[in-house]
Image (cartoon, rainbow, N blue to C red; front, side):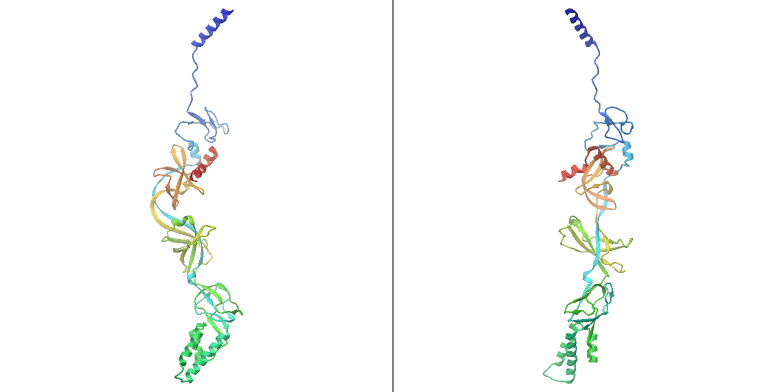
Length: 401
């Protein structure tokens, strides 16, 4: 029995030695995935367990990195992925700003009482009324002014009847006359008083300027102190468009730029002007600065309070540009998708600058000749998030910080 077991063991070993060896499993560089469901990955061909489509082969060792996004031809077609080459072109810096039309304060006038008294009649009682220079404003009853009128009449009579070389009566008359002029009477009124020698208890005052009434503070029967405001006039032949500029954009502001003003209330019409003033004070809450543009209003259709849009066209330059729709932007960064190989794309952070007519200046991140995605960039971004669970911009924002 012992010898029998030994013989069987020898025979079994010989048979194993002479039998052909099984080939070792060969590792392949190809896996299979679904063009519609890239999360499906198998070692061999077959059908997608989700949609039933035939799986397509993908090379594992094609030089791609984890940041690369490889798409199938079907995905490129369905996503309408379109490419463009980064190149140099002429571009200007157009700055779009929101604005509000306001009164040109240099063309406004305040009408105040020259002397204390009571308004017996106010001839214009509505804001928005237009006054010409010399129009009647109000009738005033003033004891002090009536006394000054009598003094002027008395001075004229003394100068005419008395001839005293020791007293300069002419000087006294001129003094009484100047007092009436300083208290608001016109030259014509003083001359009429000198001619008739009759002083009315009411004195009419006239508009010293022309414009629209923007403020009305006086009313019939009001007692006015000297210097009290009655109304305010504004000449609207020129208005201000006061635009809002964020502090971060102030360095790019060209004060010699031509401003084009458009109003939503008048589509198709535009006005041109230039920057007259940049407010040196910045609102600490909004971080906004005001820029003032002077706009001609010859037609008289512009009114204070109207909203407006201001376009500032700065100087032009020959710069590296690409279509603006190729750039995905958030608060901290801007990203484009660059083609690194056939149907292979990678996100790249860029620094942008000027923007004009749909094209955007690229200051850094790309070079001339790079091929970027101009249509379908947001779809690529969504596909990346679907595969990796995070946006490619998230890591870039952390690096930038």
